Length: 463
Image (cartoon, rainbow, N blue to C red):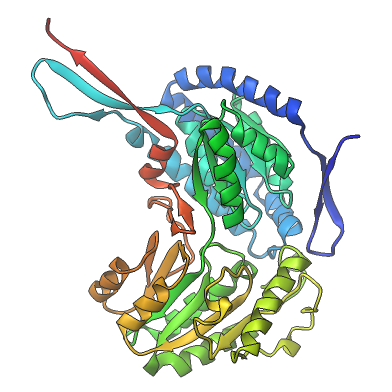
């Protein structure tokens, strides 16, 4: 009997998608086809690869309305917000294709008489992409498009929560005429995903997910010696300095904390505010939270949808309640959100104050619409607290003094430093983390370095 993958929509708890899970023979067949297809694909001129992939982006964007609605049904983001993911997909894909020629150009060594010396960037072979549900296209496109542009074949395993996203990639590539075998998607169990990653034909794995998931990837790839890029989430901090523009900081950071029901690896989870701005800042964030309309993501008036599943919402409720028992105060009136029900995926936003770092809520990853706010009295205190975490994905500084803010950024253990913004990926910049937030890099020309290997050519000109 064929095992089935079932996607339960957080909208109403019903089964939205059912798909048969692939088996070991399917993995072997996909990898065998990818090996053969990749050789021809790698020999295809880069300009031709880029043109074909550009057509695939066109085909994907043409289905934007349907794709956005599917996102809402699969993982719960409001339909008012889901189209933004399609726009982000296009922005990142087109940027990575635009810089491919420059990023993949040979590095010419310093002149040496009688020799021509250069380093070419050549494809790794087969890249396995393991993608999550929270930003199902934005996380996947970071690896899929540049890996293909660089001449690799790609096997995509998407989250069980968002299986249609893998199929949308496949449909766009088929419409563009991508040769068979260059891109394949497989619906896999966790055990079979490990089998895929451990196969010696896989050269590199791009994984986005939990810390425990990252450890499983490392264990699997050790068996076949594939390299791995890991984006494992965060506990991203922000610091509102005394010279920050208050209203902008409130609007930006509240959105950074609550957008997508707080289910963002680079969402804001803890905020440190200069003493003189603290009271007004907290008041503003609470007002922002109370303005949300929590409800069905299919309703165009909804501005905050459910979390991905009821168990995820219960985890956040537990974190918040544990902090409250240790002295934290909840400032958002839950009774104002009738859709928020214990045991359901629908969870109102929450702002916690009187928090400190003895509370797990301020140190452990929380993946939901809850944020803790602390008062600080100096830059040094803010830096110390921002670095007091096992994670290091992004950090944000709000200040009118760019030079001082950059100095603070230099002292932070993080992959990205924002000034007067947060919760955003710029495809021109390297997306990377430190500590438990992962290793490796996607996006920018540096991202291409993770998806290729250097191959040196040393030619004697005259004999």
